[in-house]
Length: 106
Image (cartoon, rainbow, N blue to C red; front, side, top):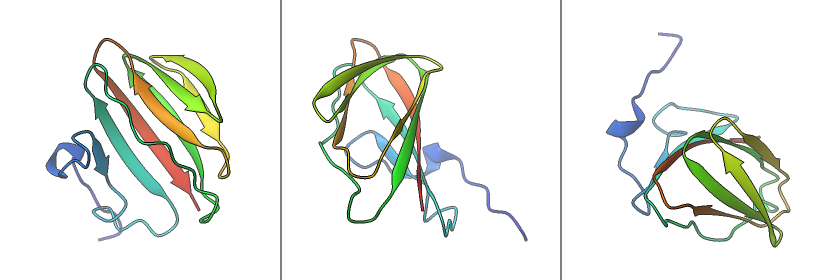
């Protein structure tokens, strides 16, 4: 079989929100994560400088703020943001649930 199919809801979440799909999909060059955020949920500050991974966050539904190197960037459903590897980033969810798709490479 030349493809791999996974439903993200079948992957146990980390931190009650993050469904990491890289391993279940057998990805070799990119990571894919679906984040189902409860109201008020925040991720942990982090960067990917050591790995050289840039990331794109796409907010599929809801509203949230991404803190990038201390600057708050407000996102509405449909917005996408590219974050370079060395930038520190943190998701801060708003007052309602939201869903993100995060993609990182290489």
